[in-house]
Structure formats: C-alpha cells, structure tokens
Length: 384
Image 1 (cartoon, rainbow, N blue to C red):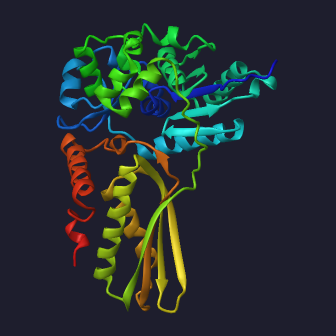
Image 2 (image 1 turned 90 degrees about the vertical axis):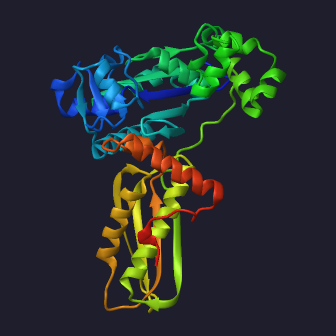
Image 3 (image 1 turned 180 degrees about the vertical axis):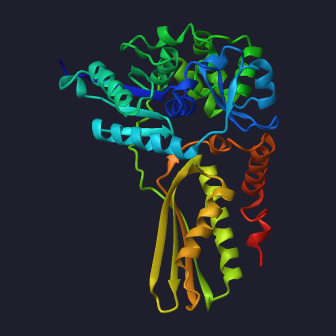
C-alpha cells in the first residue's frame, strides 16, 4: 500500500431504510410492494419499496395516487421508534469503526478515509464496514467511494440496491457525464425543469456550459452546480457531534406557582426551538426540561425519543417531563427546554400518519414566522 495525496470519501446509504426496518419486523413483507405513510387517501407516501417503485410510485406522492398506480401495495403506518433505534445502532457501528464521519441524515453517512490506504486499503475497509453493518443489523446498505462527497453520493445511488461502486481518481467527469442532470444532488425539481427547458439533459452538457452563464442564471448556486457537474467538490466531511443541542430558558420576573402560566411558557419555548430545528433542517432525539425553584435548587429530566422536529410531538414530551419534575409546593424561578442528539433530516419523514395538509401547514407556519418574525403565529395554548 502507498500513501495517497488525495481525499478518499465514502458515502453510505441504508437502502430503503424505513421499508427495510419494517421487513425485519415482519419477514413476510420482504419482496412485496410496500408503502410507508398514512392510510387515508389524503396522506402522502413517506417511503416505498423497490417493488412499488416499478409502478411509478415515489416518496412525497399522494397516497391516493400511489394506491391507484399500485393497488396490490401493502400500506404501513410507520414506526419512528424502530427507525430511530436502528439509526442509532448503525451510527454506533460507524463511530466505532471509522476515524471521522458525518451523519447527513437518519440513514446516510459520509466517511473520510483519506490516508487509510497506507494502513488498510480504502476499498477493502469500506467493503468490510458494509458487511459488518448488514451482519449486525440485518439492513441492506449501498456505498460509493471517490475523491469527494458529490461523486460518492451519486455512485451510491448508481450502485443500489445493496451494491457498491468505486470511482477511480481522474474518472469523476467520465462517470458523471452520461447521467441525467437530475442525478446531481443539488438539482431539485425546479432547477431540473429549468435545465431541461434549456436543453440540458445530461451532466456532461451541464459541465460544458460556461461557468459565467451558470452564475448569471442561478447565482452562487449556479457556480457550485457547474463545479459539481465537473466532478469538483471540496466540501469537507464535518465530524459528527451527537451532543450538539438547541436550548432556551426563561427566568421569571416574579417566582410563580401558576401552572397555567408555566405551561404557556413551555409551549412558547418548545415552539421557538422547534422552529429552529426545522429551519436548520435537523431532528432531535432527546428532550430535556429544567426547573429551577426559588431556593435555586435546579432539577432536570431528559428522555430519548424517536427523531422528530414537530412541535405537537415535542410538546407532548415536554409536558410529560414537566409534570414529573414540578413540585407544586414550591415557587418556580426558571424553566428551560433543550433538544439534543441532533441529526440532519427533514421533518416530513415523521409524518407517517399525517396528511398532506399537515405537511403544508407546517411549511406555511415556518415560512410565515421566518419571513415576518418568530412569534407572528403560535399556538393558542402559548398565550396568556
């Protein structure tokens, strides 16, 4: 083995994670078309199996349409307790086995293996890591290996299901070139539509557009998109720090035993940092409530929860913890709420039993509060 002078980045993705967990719970589901989401026609598809995708079903599709396309599909409500458990289990394995990793979502990881060729061989090491994860969890996993995060992620997608794909140094552009432009991680629905209207259907065509033109078209995002189409991405692997948290606390002007007042304060604080979670595109896996009494005795309780960023779920846990902490004989000086065990992720994955209207409601509330100010709209229970 020899020491490399370039980066080596692996991207790991747990294949159809939510569906795979359901199949582990019930082996009879394996190989069948499965839809994860609410059972009503107004619900949306949160995840689906490869068997269902063959019928044109995809995530975020209205459940009514999905069932019309694939009437034989089995609809499952989803189990965030199980998904959180398996996500933490895989995270523990990765943490134990690799020098530096980034958890980019509940079921995806980037691993920086730079320099490990001289000790182990990056290809062999990543393959053995995949085998370990599958052996210890039962979950299928795909990975891509290259010099940067963009190419590795695309390689992972191309290697699915349950596969592996390594892109040698210098082959980044030739690998990306023939692929549809929508394969690039930065290309969403709107950007993809715009590029196709311009006649840009492949990544190779995108890479040949002058950089200045892309910048004029999409600003800084246009420049970054051009770079990635050319296989250039210096984005670092950000070391995973599970203990990072978001918190807030409030010291009352006068010590109080007014339970209704304190509950309203808890609602306001929970909504505030819940909004911050969603604004940062993060989920929390642990809730802590703190109570400081007038004599300065300070108590706190925490609880590990299924990953979420939804106010109505977080409020239930905050109220539960407060009820366990509060001694009604004593005046309270301060209340605090903290969300920790943060991971990147979109809160929509939690809405397995909610409707598309609920998703749109959260998006609308967050949009209004972000645009006009945090406390423009809040729950009535947070008002006095």
